[in-house]
Length: 470
Image (tube, rainbow, N blue to C red; front, side):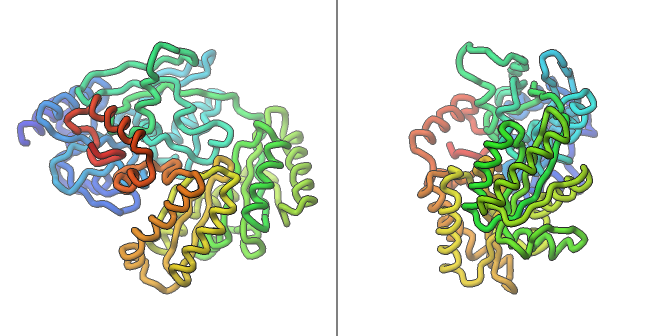
């Protein structure tokens, strides 16, 4: 492999082929579930360099692992322990190539950090609505490769819905330039959608053309206490009727999840955490005025109080208060980590089935594991729950994870199937779920997926062991 490494140094510069020193930023996944060993970490600075790197690796028969910000949650961008895989890091490809105001699109390279793109769009008078907790370090290429969701899917859709075109390096090292900003192009198979959500198994996304939206005149945030998950669903229905397209966020959080935030981050003020089993965070983006948005919220919450689906509520008075409320919601995963290792699930269900799912699955888990603690929160507006399972109080978290994860996953996923849901809503499959997928995915669908993988990457060199096994 020495010859390949020397060739890679020639292609991108010796400073951008990392083989020595501390490479944990590239070799360890965000959750620290996997600790791999790369043959090299290669950081191309352009699409041409990326294509040349892929061609060199393909010629040498070396597997490649595309990597963005390395913030994924299903071990989808970490090399294995063999020391034979090349990590393709896009962190140098950060340029905003073009912002087309009339077309309301922006074309960026795959290594552009999501928050940087949000700020670039805002400075130009536009909104790029993709928003998630890791936005300060996740990248656009990774967002698209995993079809990231986040907090505004309810209004704007997943990453897939925000993308109009892609530039991709194929496993053979060819470049497909599909960076069209067209909203209509009915000329055959939609290759863009094929690569979005493929988790780097079909090719390397190097750039994208994305949709922009007008900045709202005002964005208001409210926090409401609700007596049950069924009441939260009822409130969602009311919010849709009263706010229409202005409803851009609808997050649900269980009392235990919020209690973890209060315990581990006591400097935060967590509203109603002891007063209600569930809380909801709502966002209303209005294109008229702040007064109009506030009036809409007040009307909605008055009606919700009358109908009994809300027991108490507060509307943020300013941007600082709104940010504090969102910070509480976004701190739940960090509080979980402080509490100890836990069994994570990223599931989606028809919204109408969520109350029954939670009631039944909670009961089954509590029956199987006395004292188990359920950290349930997520994007109720689009049917996505982060239904996580924490060890009983005082139990050893690592032992719980090691001994219970397989059985807990089977119980949770069987219930998901029973209620017509999916075992992965926004995190992807990666390597953590690749062997569970055949139990919950149609054999016909899996057959088509394998055919696509085999057609584009017959030697299985692009992110092997992820999404689907050959």
